[in-house]
Image 1 (cartoon, rainbow, N blue to C red):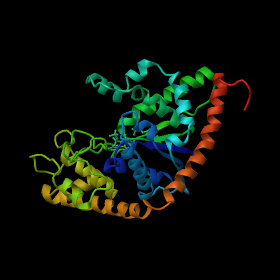
Image 2: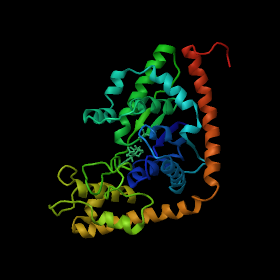
Image 3: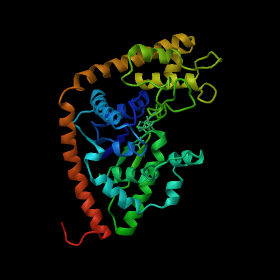
Image 4: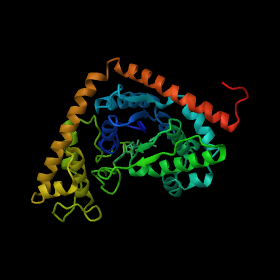
Length: 330
Ligand code: ATP
Ligand code: LTN
């Protein structure tokens, strides 16, 4: 069976964007692939996190993984920092990556070009740790949102370079970016991605939002004065975003949604979107409340870390041998 791997940073509460762009797909994939999913807590601390809040976000993220339907019987689910080999391989890959490559990574480039101060070295080498996450398990496919594709491409370059330098070692992974829902936008500013680290953004729907709050956010989504339900992300970014949310959650095509609602006013359409969003959230939240205070979370993470460590350790030893770090064979 081919292997698929992905991770989410718990840098805040998980959002509807994370669900549509990532989690929901992981659940589908777990039946057809050997699925490995983890909580990228090491990536998360590349930007300072309040420890208490981070711990809460981590726990909620695992509970939400399960609440959204990830099944520990089918997928390996673990916390990144529980598998030490990620950071160790990260260092070795860092030594096989050029600063020029890291300078070109959009996530870094954007912040650096805005003159943002206080960027950490961890943030700069973030893509090499991500490459380690992927390559250590020989993943065939990496489902990510549009914004992360460049990082998977770098992981491919690093894998090829390493394989050429030290002989065949890593499988070269393919990014998988879905067509609909790869970039859900903020409801208050549809030109900006819905992002969990934009704390206090009224246009961000959190999976654990009170249903009335979520409904209000949809009802006050920024639209336009054109007054027609069209899928036109350039001229009607707000309405197009709502169409995309509706299509993703209902499993319908964009065209079908447009056809169905083309004669509706914006208010009526927003109400229909709010219904679908609230229905999705209420199912997730029901399951979340069942598991958040059970001992299921600890068991899942312990079991997941055991399985992942076994695979990661074997691979790291192989890499260390290739690089010449060992003296005696282990
Ligand atoms: P941050 O604000 O900390 O950058 P984020 O919410 O943007 O976080 P990530 O942790 O970077 O999300 O992403 C986890 C996964 O969810 C990735 O595959 C990412 O592409 C996807 N994702 C995140 N936000 C969206 C979105 N608005 N639309 C679609 N997919 C998204
Ligand atoms: N950088 C990713 C999270 C992430 C990831 C990974 C995704 C860390 N390691 C490995 C896929 C594979 C993000 O910000 N979404």
